[in-house]
Image (cartoon, rainbow, N blue to C red; front, side, top):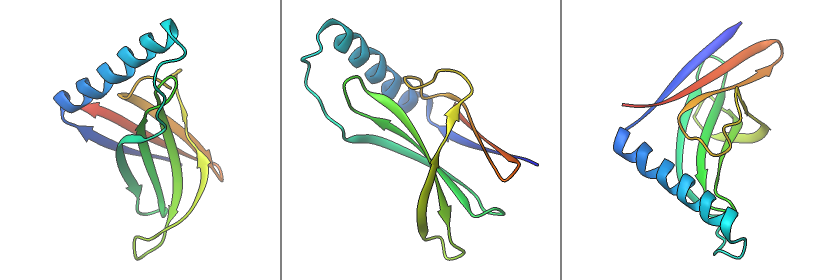
Length: 117
């Protein structure tokens, strides 16, 4: 079965994050000695409640900065139990925030669409 969830991010916020990803990536390509930070800049989350699965899409600093998509189990009382896999974007999106991410588990397909509104 296929499950889909959408994360909506204000356009201005998405644009600012993408500018950070683009600029920092270009700076990194020019100068590998640029300042390194592994901090999470922003996290956007969704939960497939019927399946008890949550997803975080994170904008992360680094050398170069990147997008980290993480899947985790969510209990009935909304507590995160365990991070258990990473999502894989449909395209190479390690430096793109907006788009479609997917993963499979036990024959089910999960799709998260991140869009600017």
